[in-house]
Image (cartoon, rainbow, N blue to C red):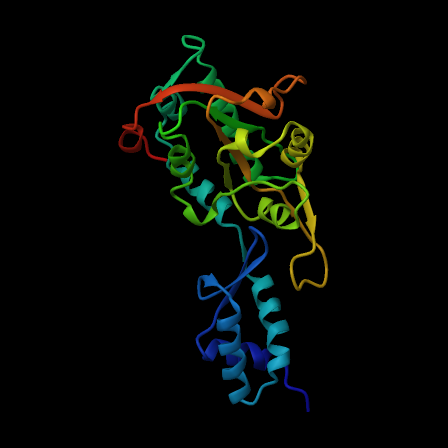
Length: 263
């Protein structure tokens, strides 16, 4: 006689396991941590020792995870929204950056547009796009540190890596990370690649088959992109009106923002 699904779930619970589905990339978690092959092998072995079919355990885990979905970025943003301090925090943050266009404050304008876009994309990526914020300035002033700092409350959702618009892994990452820094953008992208990068930035929905997956993953695009360049943003000038690249030229950064501003 076949063992019921309820019996499998009860056994997993009795063994101390709880599962949930992280909707940022459809990642299964066990007891609050990402489920990897080693932990899965342990679970299967323990269930086999209890008299259950190890081959059925995978499906039961997926079913249980799907019943307990959550989105970490949405949860974080909802909590932050409930504790807003009433200040113009974006303006206060931008004041720590010396923008070559002062007093016109191009950096503040682009930063505000990009941050609002990053929130909107996280909350409903299927209906919102966000341009790439490009920080152009001397090497060593802290552009990359700033990109990482922006995501410091959620460090697991920050990515520092190159983009290959036609690569499957890059497409998957678009649905898994919130802030994606592309360092040394001017040195790693050719003029011929700019159009492909524009299309990548504009994606609202990710449709891709994950490794070992049986069906396509269809998820809203989550990542908002920051590019850093060293006085070489010329190839990123968007003749359509800066819809995809928000280029700000920075002379210097006052690092006291890390203590004066709460990310």
